[in-house]
Image (cartoon, rainbow, N blue to C red; front, side, top):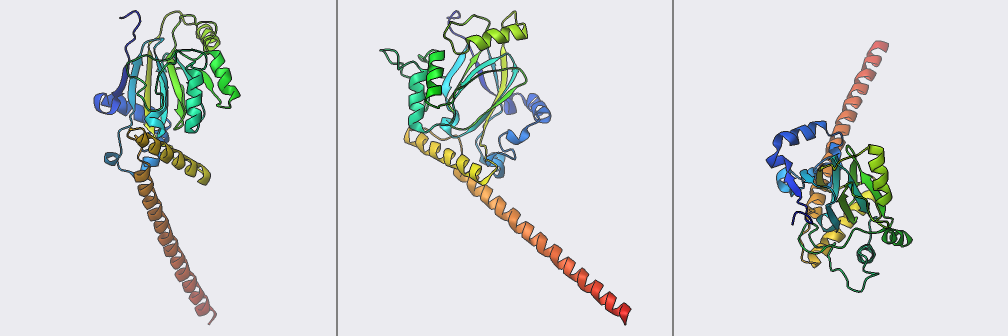
Length: 293
């Protein structure tokens, strides 16, 4: 039914199917550290053949279609979403423990206000699968999540903008159209303002590039938290009959081996430098003695 159903082009593999576009993306994108296997990625020490494919992928989607709440890789991976054309209406929560995720979804799906519950597994289901999905969240649900300190972020991602979605964070995307939204839709004000500011007069197809990766962290505390979150979500995914997309154990082993090798190489270099300095000092001292004599 073309009146009610919109078609997505999703997960289109840039590397295999659009190699020239991929090469152009690699050479022009300024934040390559945030790509799969980049310097800030936990998989940085795992060779490309030893890690799962996580993109980048191409997405071409019509206005007003949406992907409902989900967590990438069942909560085990981060994701990057770069908007090239069109506008993405986004709702994203902070990282939450499992029981709070269920409660937040109960609110966002409107199940706290309806007699017939909408059954939708946002944690371990597939976000693009067929079947009934809950409606887009209204402002009441957003306000309720704020009261619970779930810190919902409601924003519009515009062309040229990138959003990093940390692992385990529930989020939903809707492609912005020009159709006026109902009074209580959480994006009503933002959509109206964006249409006016951008001077939009016709519908715009949304084109995006997205990928998954494993943010490693920078500080000792940050690295520990990222690893703990990945391992916890990977364990929960297995308990729910799902395969973790991330490879935290393999990544950790290879990362530790790499860091140990770098440390030992540094020690050897320092020892070599110190030895050279010692020889140089002895030689200089001998020259001084000979000169004095």
